[in-house]
Length: 568
Ligand SMILES: [Zn+2]
Image (cartoon, rainbow, N blue to C red; front, side, top):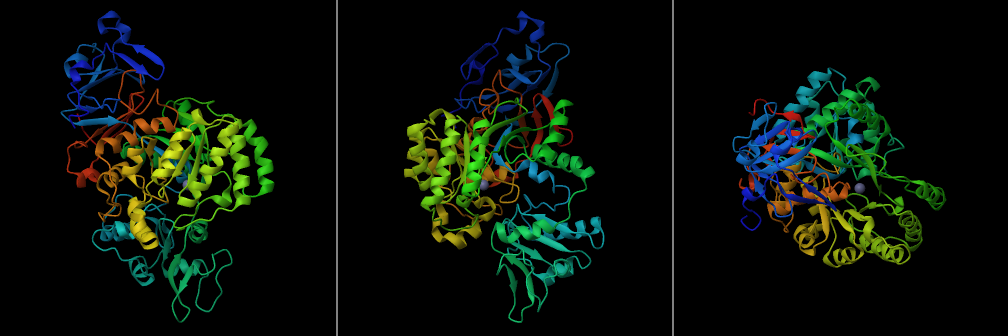
């Protein structure tokens, strides 16, 4: 701790703060009244996550920016008669948390309808929630969720749900509970709705063998496999009425703010939800920052032909610090997209040739890239291609990132570092740890190898890949990184990192992934005023309690977007 904790008294309003290449010089407060802050947070433990991991006490905000960070005394001097002061009463504040890869906008389409179990660690509680939801939606209404949880997160009982059990819990409602992208638990009403019955063939869109049946041919209620196996169930879930989309998206972003999340790398910015967010932005009430990961992925050689001119025309960075397109991704050539829960891959030369053609165009167009790559052989094969591309069109300053990378190793990290690449680490094991141990055996112990990644010196950040493949709560992910334990407490990885490095990976480092390192990721003068006040101290709470830390206030651009009752 002392290693990175310096005397906050030196960090005052008058510092010359390096923000990227721009030098922001703070003038003394007395010099002009126009510098008077609108808002001051004082008497806190402000974990700035600046380069020296400075701890301060107070922050001054004017408009949407931080204008000074320092001791309570120093910052108090800046306040004018119209400055609002929030007494943090010793509480810890951290920078707004950034998830570098979350399917945020897609989730808006189902959020209001889904029974979310992020952070629910009791099976008993989960069952109560099914009962309550059944009552709310009424007889015949669907009770369902689309991933984001796993049975192993339940501390009281980790057993799977059975058809009979779900029939007893919700006799009058169809129930479909999707465990990550691994399996779905259905009750009899749901099976009936899908026309999955004893003595009848499987509906044609279900993956062959994914509908589990007992010896007599009676469906057990379990659909098992991977994304392809779970997809037909998700496709059959009720759709949100168009006039509910805004409310659903509102509930979604409120849940994100409640979790301390303020900015996102968003894989796939769905047009319908983006339109709502653009409207909120115009009305100055968008409570999150959205940085889209999108592009012209191809699934066949013919599509590659079509994608190439699209890549040449792609324009990024036309937006601002609220909404922008920042990077090509997350797929390049979809036949090489590692399936979740696949235990190995075998990239073929003809597929890699297509992948390389696209990557060559992306490099030629000088676009950043953020590409899904999970398994060892896929990562090696992509790096072979990228090294070849790099010889023709150097990628060093383009921030090319491999994403997910749970099976990455030290040699690969070294190759990436030489290329100037980044690693976007999305530990699927936060909920899928037990499932991954079934598939990979001891190999899952190092998925991801967090200490190896940290030691490599590569630029890397943490994300969730939520909200189906993973849960989205950053405090649960930070707990995982520090303890090696998945949601619910099972120890699933052996390489952990210290809590400072984990927090850096969720804030300052992730700012690079969304191309906002001059604006976001730390509490420093000149940056946007995104911060989170916590109910206990992230730096000193016992490691096992990190997952229980709750934000009491979330601030985005100097505006309070979430508050858990009276905090000041
Ligand atoms: Zn992915």
